[in-house]
Length: 234
Image (cartoon, rainbow, N blue to C red; front, side, top):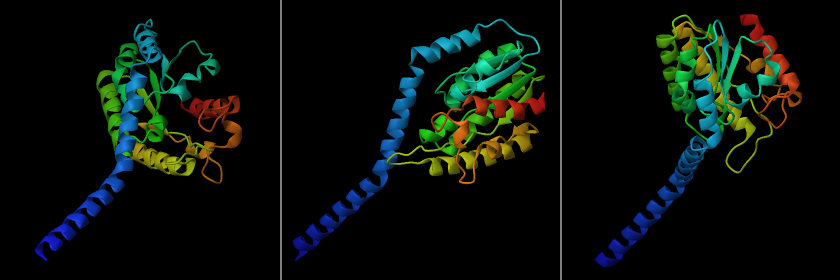
């Protein structure tokens, strides 16, 4: 009887451990995938090349600098003002802006517009981590660029992004959470929060179809709308 009881307990323990493994496996796999994606991204020649280019650009007096990922980089064709500097790198994450912040500090821009976070969210970087990275970026800029006027732009919604583990609906919920936290942070730090989200989202809380090429990136109409909103702050 004693052996049977022990065997029963061992079986129950094995089942419990199996259930725990099943519960934590998706999270473990997600974290592993995120680390792999980011590791490969920051080892890419293109990121290193653009980082170096931005670090070595001539100093431009009284500039307006845009800092972010592909949303920002793809803005370049529509930014014809010679005083504008565009330091966007396609695919970048919030941690990447920390790694290359010296290029911004070196320029001492008159105005700095930041947008980052959608790639973090898509790759399941925790919102609290994105928020913490934002804090690091802002504290560094404020401490090293005392004359720079800072504008934090809300992360934009997505549409039609669907996979086994996520969708645009779940992504956009996280986007809204990040934006709310950034809005609060800007209020605490006395910075300007540029809330673009309402202008780009439709009645289903998705990125308006006519404003996007692929569910994330913007059409010419999208950039025209973006320009219209931020020109209010010049």
